[in-house]
Image 1 (cartoon, rainbow, N blue to C red):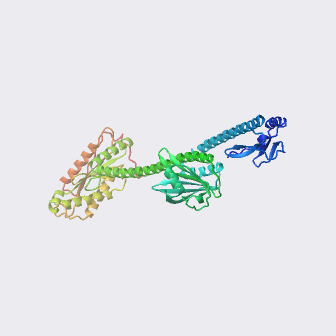
Image 2 (cartoon, rainbow, N blue to C red):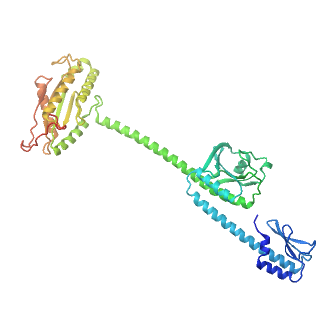
Image 3 (tube, rainbow, N blue to C red):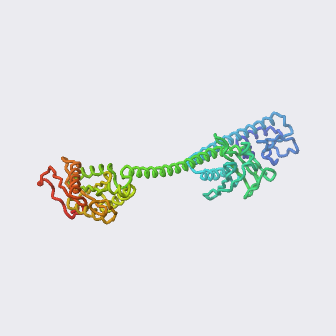
Length: 472
């Protein structure tokens, strides 16, 4: 109901002056308030007929006179009703402006909320400022049930209630029909289901979005109120904004969860791919039988070290190792034992090397190549001796060998300081020639053959000693 002070309107100077001029003609007339108390006019009228002045079916005052049909009386009634209608229009326009301003303000605030509970808490705080009541509840439909949210007044908190059936109570009817309702006396409504808090009067609105019904929103009072159509109209407008904001927040939470899930899956997939790549890289660079570097890895590593040491003018040594009489071993013990023998030898070679840059690779069959960066001839000779000793210490029986009852190796060694005018193939050929000489001399031995670089001795840098880089 519009709050309008009838007596104040009648006693406004302009209105009072007009009425007083009509009364100066000694016309028996008076204006009374809604309790029939005189405001202005002839106070000794007795029990005369009265004309009701009403707003929205509620009497706010009376005009009384024995001559209600008299032109002066009709003029007075017309003036009063005109003035009241102007006031009603002004109040209505102001209310609409305040409502629009309120809705605009809450819309701006809601646009910053990306969390469902933040939206619900804001809606509760703002709605209870404009609409009579002391509690607001939001119910969101999820898989045939309603998830209840209880925002707590004066606390920055929203309590998550239990899920309840979507088909019961006043809220269930509102959700089903999609029509908002006012229930000013809930105890007289058979659909009402008591809550954990006292409710005497309520308004319930569906939360409608472009994609359908999201749930319901309910505002209530613990004392009996007379909610009006105007209250419901404002509440529906609020519910519309709440529905859009809640849906946006739900979409944002789903998107965030999806994003986190996607990031986790991408991270897991990336880790899997990295592991697979590592495995593929190992497969591409390792010999499948002996699990040491293969020829491809040997070639890449050797070329890289050759060009690096050519820039730095550091020494590079190579040892080519061959298992003595290995064909005889295979013929005597079988290929499975032969494979196990090669595996043991390969791992022994690998353990003998101490530096991360040193490399052992299977070159083919029973032949292995050891690459020793930053290692001079004397250092390579020491490594070859350790290899020979460690292989012999494996104690692998070889009754078919013509040099020893145990597995032994022949080795060719060469060393140089790489230059851009020479190639690694030349160093390999020299070491291979040394291996051939070791076999020719009876096997189970090491032969060193010098690789003569085209650089004159005067141009070759003096090798550093005991610096942690070069083997001596």
